[in-house]
Amino acid sequence: MAELILRDLAKTYKDGTEAVQGISFEVADREAVFLLGPSGAGKTTTLRLVAGLEDADKGGISIRGRDLTRAAPRDRNVAMVYDKHSLFPHLSVYENLAYPLRIRKMEEAEEKQRINSVSEVLQIEEQLGKMPGQLSGGQQQRVAIGRALVRDADVFLLDEPISHLDAQLRARMRVEFKRLQRDFDATMLYVSHDQLEAMTMADRIVLIDKGKIEQIDRPQDMFDRPKSMFAATFIGEPVMNTIPVKLVEQAGALFLEVGTSLVPAPANWVARLGSGHDSEDFVLGVRPQHLNVADPAARGDDIIHGEIFAVETLGSRVIFDIELGGQVVRVMNSVDEARKVPSSIGAAISIRLNSDLFYLFDKSSGTTVLQANFTETKST
Image: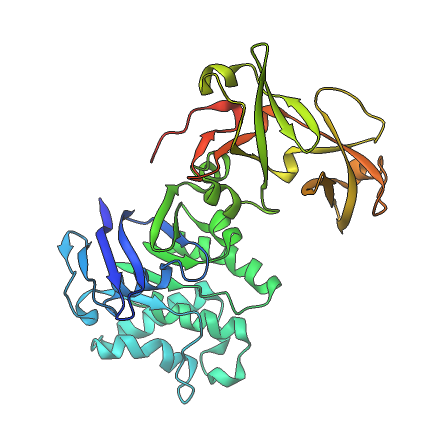
C-alpha cells in the first residue's frame, strides 16, 4: 500500500514562477524516496506542499488513504527534519527530544521509553543532559533527526538534513540514515541535490528539474538507463561526456564523426535508426569510466587521438581531460592503467572506445534515442 501519494501537484508563486508543474508519484510503506535535482528544481516546494506549509494550486496529496490536500500541518502526522538543526538552544537534548511528545500529552513513562530507545539508536545517550551549544554539528543534527523519529509519524520529510556537515561526517551519516530507516520501519521523502546521497541511500529516485519529473527509477537503473540527457549527466560522477556527433552512412555502415575521427557505430544502429542519417541531430554520451587511455601510437577502428588538456590524480584513480578537435573528453582509469601512457599537459594520447557502452541523445529534445547495449528506451 502506498503511504504517500501525490497526484498532479502544482504550485505557482505570485511572481509567476511555476515551482511545481503537475508532478505525480507514490512513496510506498517503509520506502525511502529521494527528490533529487538541481537548485530551483522544485524539490523543497514539493516537500513543503506535503507538509502543509504551502498550499497547492491544484492536485492532491493523500497519506495512508486520507486526502490531506487542504489539511492543516498538525493534522497530517508528518515529521520534518530541516537542512539546519533548528533545536531549542535553551532546552537540553532530552527536553528537545521530549518537546513533540509533550505537545501530544504523552504519558511520562512512554515519553522516557521512546527517548531512550531513539537516543540509543542515534548514539546520543550520553548527550541527553547537555545543551545544544555543547554539541558538535553532527551531534546536533542527530538530535534534530531524533526529535522527528520519537514521533509515531506516518511519513518523515527530510530537507537536505546533512548538507551542512563536513564530507567525512556526511559519509558516515549516509550509512546511518539507511540503518535508521530500517530500524524504525520509516517511510521517508528526502530532498537532496547531491546525487551521491541519492545513489547510496534511496530505494527510488524522483529526478526533478524546473518543476517537472524527468525520471522515476531505482538508483542503479537510473544510472544504467537514463531516459534523457539531463538524467544521464546529472547522475554519475564524473559527469557523463556529451559530444555532438555527426552520423555518417557509408555503403550501408554507420559511422560517428567524433572530432576528426570516424568511429564505426554498432551494426544494429542502422536497423534501429533507419537510413538517411548524414546529419548532426545527435549527441553521443559516454561515461568517463567506460573509456580507456591508450598509447598515442595505438591504431584501430576503436581508437581516437587527442592531446592531454589536464590530469587529476585521485589516489586509486586518474582522470584525464583529453582534447579532441576542440571538444574536451574525460576519461577515468585506474592508476595502473594511467602509468602506461604519457601524463604531461599537451602530450599526445589515444582513447580506446567501447561502442557497446555508448548512449545517443536527440540534440533538440534531449531524449535518449539509444542506450548502452542498445536497448530501446521505454518511458516510466
